[in-house]
Length: 234
Ligand code: C5P
Image (cartoon, rainbow, N blue to C red; front, side, top):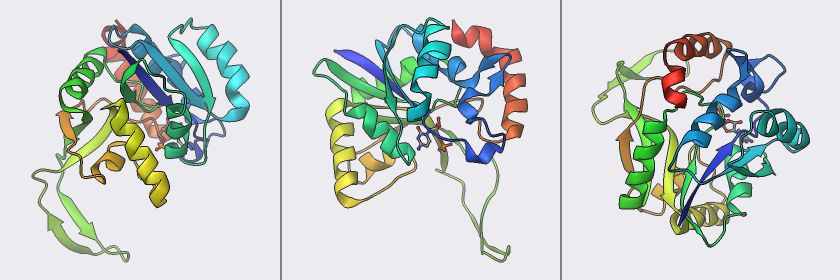
């Protein structure tokens, strides 16, 4: 069975405020999305990549990203939808009989390591549905809309959830079908599986595995690639 990685990069990047969608901004001279794709391209446990980008970007992405950087594992480029969940669903529609494990990873999380991808796929093979995350280190408070603290929430057992997330194919297909039937929109893929009352395993991720969302993240990202990227890509 083959393992396919779906990389949603179909967002318009409104929060960055630069006009250019965040997946195309340069980190160390290379687009954020290329950094991400190179890690999956280099991973021995990933057979194929389905890339999701805004519809109008498809020809440019095919030439200036997939072609230029020789990302030959990208076998499909599909158009994104209104929400991230719609973008992932557009890619799920192209899964084939031979696909066993489906990974989903945000195109803007460039600092994922090959080692983390390997662990996530192994955990999905064993347990069916896996998310990665990091334990909350700061104090967590519930605050009302006027800015006053209601209470401090115990952080024990609280995890900030990242991607990659990985699933056995029938499970993610059923979860997406159920969410569509119920009109449910989640912020990640695992939440769709959770609502079917199927257990999702959480495995430790990496505090560096940030999503490039704001201009400050680009500055932090430059520092992370200077420290770590060569070893992460290979
Ligand atoms: O917006 P957010 O930070 O949650 O985006 C996470 C990932 O999902 C990004 O790589 C973004 O490009 C992608 N996305 C998408 N389709 C959308 C919105 C976001 O593929 N409609």
